[in-house]
Length: 182
Image 1 (cartoon, rainbow, N blue to C red):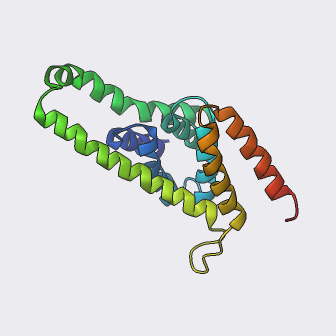
Image 2: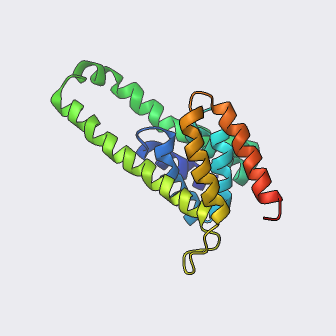
């Protein structure tokens, strides 16, 4: 339980920019420590993304639940939220007072670049895992997954204002692709 608290206090403390930024750090902490496997992490990430609420909190809740059930879920979630709550509460007045300061403006400007890099890293890591079937040595590609990614990316141009249509199409294509012998 202590390890769970320390992991999510650490992630909550050093994650600036939202739950998507937390993904690589959570992955590093929980997968490398052996709390969950990388495959479990990817599956959990898909579930966390599809459930309501911030993805970082959903991930913390899931990992906590897998380790210590309900108590673990509550403790991991609270540990993830606590550092941000304390920092925002302590700095809110200063940020309001100095929000037009060049130092603060530039700090947030460069912070955006770091956040984009972290999200990009997570996206590439997940994409590689989704497309590569078994490790990197042979680079066995799952061409069905590649085709689905391309098709769904193209369909996004037409249905971006109606995500529910994309979800239905994606689910039907996924079921048809992976349940039929093609």
